[in-house]
Figure 1 (cartoon, helix red, strand yellow):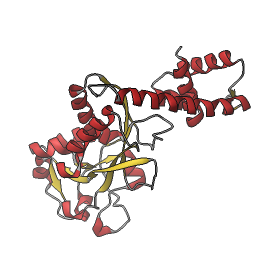
Figure 2 (figure 1 turned 30 degrees about the horizontal axis):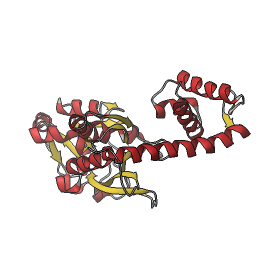
Figure 3 (figure 1 turned 135 degrees about the horizontal axis):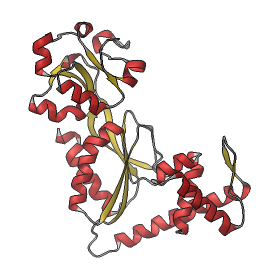
Length: 299
């Protein structure tokens, strides 16, 4: 096995706290993660991790080796960056790791990645979609898309993207059969399609009602946004979903916006990447394209 790869896997295990989480972060199986760790331990002749059925922790040797791994991997990344910057053509190449939230990532970010790959086929892209905050440095991500306010950071550059809007909508057929609600209270008379997480924990919020969510009823709930979209297009009821997921349906008239002026303001969205005086071509070109397609000026 590649020793540098094994070191990167070991760092991921130490940062995430488990083989399973490291496997997800490194796009490996948990079995392969274990093989990487065993190879390092055999090479060093020492145990790096103390493991039992419930938890694991670094040994003294493991803690010292972890610091060295971080330093070595950082030096390798810097060396690769220098080599790429010195190339005559400066054409993007190498591996680009991107992380984004599930819904936004599966629609808008995935479209940017597809266009990027068409332009720069020498780059291989890993797009990791997860509704959790990834650590760009520890997990070796080049770019992250984040929804919501940002904490101050001296290590990351943040570029604003189009805000993340939630919208209420329904199909023309449903509205013909059941009428069009003109205020949030009218939704109690309609079949509302729920996302399971929002239904149980958040509900539907409207400016006129203050911070308390509106508890509604309906005959369909799911934890998958695309399933809700399909049900709404089929005329099954009224849905609350991110605008980015429904953009094509709204543009085609398959869905109609409702209660637009009564929804909470959109949440901010940013593109983040490690601060560098001379970003690699693969990163700078991706940032340029993402800003063109998802930036505020592209609305």
